[in-house]
Image (cartoon, rainbow, N blue to C red):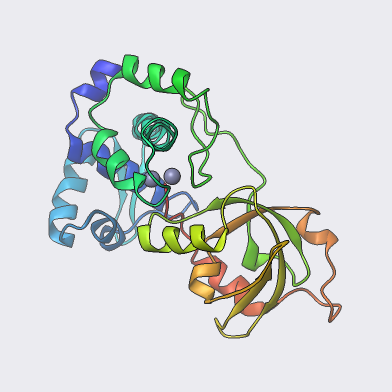
Length: 253
Ligand SMILES: [Zn+2]
Ligand SMILES: [Zn+2]
């Protein structure tokens, strides 16, 4: 397995990682979104995707995009595990702040080997999530399922515990950190203005208003399952939240 990974270059591993995350909702990742995610041109991405398809790591569907083959998934999960363990290490051992670690982990995730990965896991106490709350795949390549749901997809009045801030945008993370909106914080959804308007949430100390785009990356473990909540108006929660959710993609790592 490790020799297999080491025979792949950094770019390949970053592509597999990006495609894995962009196709997590079951839809192929389009060439444009992959290019955007990796900061390359669509034509460059398209050449690379063909190469990955030749190596049987990626399956291409014309006009739809790319998904990973089982072998591609295995390699992507290994890189993702290393990325997330590195983030924990960078905070716990090196004293970085949570908005600073993604870029360093991204640079290191493709260069460490199995021994290094195992040592990091041991030193950090075998964490199950990264500092942002993303689940860390197990050493044998399983991504455990978690009960996380988008806060904005919950009915108004719903409460729960933040499990993940699903973005790798450093500025957003810094802002969330300042507001105390981080994994383990308790929140209640107070209101969602229609048409992608402001979202108001409360914490034990504060009432906080966020733009919809920002609020959308907060994932919580709700106190009750979604269908057990009845919204104040006695009907399911705001329709626009559901429409937006259809286009949901995991952004962070
Ligand atoms: Zn990250
Ligand atoms: Zn992370």
